[in-house]
Image 1 (cartoon, rainbow, N blue to C red):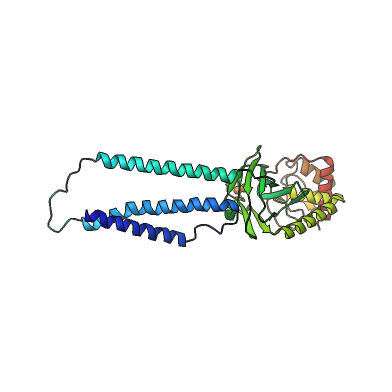
Image 2: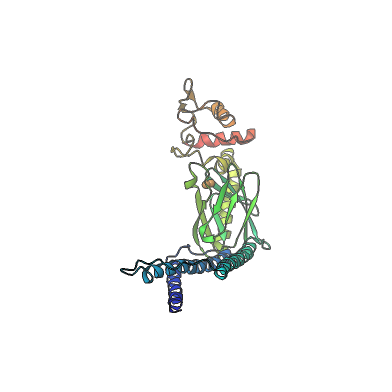
Length: 333
Ligand code: CUA
């Protein structure tokens, strides 16, 4: 009986030490959304359960190894034990009950996190290899950074252009896949000002690791100023063909084509117009309007040397959009 009391006390002590040790390691980043509260509460409960189970196994094991080790000169067999129905029933029933209880808590927790809130602000999110794009239908703006007003319910309506991506800002805790051909939703109420990063949490190709973008949670005043700025920029762009072309570039092209001469995936657009381009097959060509239009419409027609292994997706741009893109490329020098 004394052994049980000692082991019981040791289990409790080691449980507490394990829990406080894990807690002190700060395994989670700071919480920055209303949804984080519930998730962190659940996480904490699991940490306590894990610490206890860990001790429940490890403490009796080491206690037995040390206290009941074979004494010097003792060559007798150990006592033979033939099963214990009560113990076996207990260690089947109790974990079953605990697991079902956790599932019940988890289901409630999940329901709370995905519950739509009244008058949430809609932000459309598009994931593509390998970048994020954001649109604010209420304000008629499209951006590459995600600005969110603090303490406002947000619903992200997310689509993918190509493969499966996953929207994840660790500080917001919640995470959701973007699946081609579907619109998935994610509910977030940011409640802490600061700069965060959205990263892609689904392996989506060679540059998956670099698929991240800034997320800024700002106060309402700053948000309004930012929206006004973005609307101003959008209005100016709409006024000229090259401006409209730049908008298309930022929505579709900039994850593969740079405008500063560097190579992301495809050829850079910097100093492209009018230059001489070496091809994989045949004589070099001049990058004139006809060549650029053909390359946008049918990327495989003339492949620039060194880019044979890259696959440009088939975009369905209108003639006017293609002209706008070419007009924009002409300005890049
Ligand atoms: Cu997108 Cu990984």
